[in-house]
Length: 354
Ligand code: SAM
Ligand code: SF4
Ligand code: SF4
Image 1 (cartoon, protein in one colour):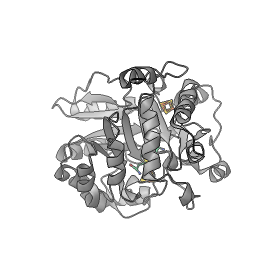
Image 2 (cartoon, helix red, strand yellow):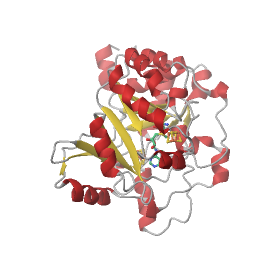
Image 3 (cartoon, rainbow, N blue to C red):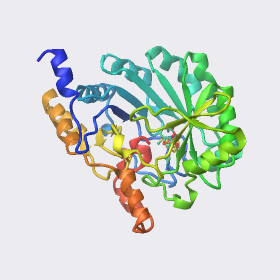
Image 4 (tube, protein in one colour):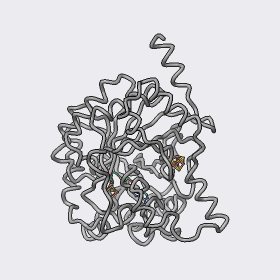
């Protein structure tokens, strides 16, 4: 089959709701150097066995099968992706695939200052740093580590290395950082970053989650417009999760209303864990073990067929389903118990990359 014919055939894969497969979140490690309460609240974790973690070559190979089916954007995440040895090498391998048009990184920023230049030289397109507070004491309380200064150094290093379009992701939590939204937008202006506020989600072991702590998009907009004046929504960009807004002075920011206004209807994302489990939804409790099939010597056609069948059977709309449970009063306590999480670490947010 000629390349151009194959391109059009493969790109046609859609799931049960007609959603294409476009974006891949590749978790390169499940380890992390922070312990954010909303993501890793426990003292002890069951880590993925090292021998199960995919090599760079395996990750690039798997990504190739995904791009054959329509993926063109890859986001490197974790755990903390900068803990993975020699990430620039993986980026270079991924970029050998001409269908990968955009590689982004989501990081907590601690190791960014020392790696930003090498990441830029390797061809990384975009960087998102997670930053929930500008108060060192709060940072320590949330993350249980004293790394605030290094995160700031990391953020400052991004532009120096040559990157543009830095994003800062903030999980907005009522009673924790809902008084810092303006401060974070102002900080974003200083470092030429667009801030995106994410509604708190109840993923994996986020056992601190409660509906009361969700600071909703509507509340964020009310609060921000009291300070800034009229806030204009910007035109939507397809399947992008963030809705963008503009302040009167032209500053833009985003809100990801994952909990109150799920965007499952346009969700084109797949997630692969560091050991090659493929999940079609952030909230999925079952996935496909791609490592096993890959290491058993499956051919390229077999791998593509596995992905195609998996995506064509996809009915996931996890956030919408959770919202329906809430609405009907059927949600009682934690959705996934700690014992189940210990048995299957893949269910944790830090394993599947947020
Ligand atoms: N360690 C990296 C970091 O923190 O940027 C990448 C992995 S982290 C799991 C990816 C993103 O998920 C982060 O921006 C984090 O704030 C977000 N996240 C984790 N738990 C969350 C939760 N319960 N609700 C909303 N966002 C969450
Ligand atoms: Fe925090 Fe990211 Fe680590 Fe989770 S993976 S504990 S969000 S730094
Ligand atoms: Fe996509 Fe699942 Fe998130 Fe809905 S809940 S937007 S289907 S990842």
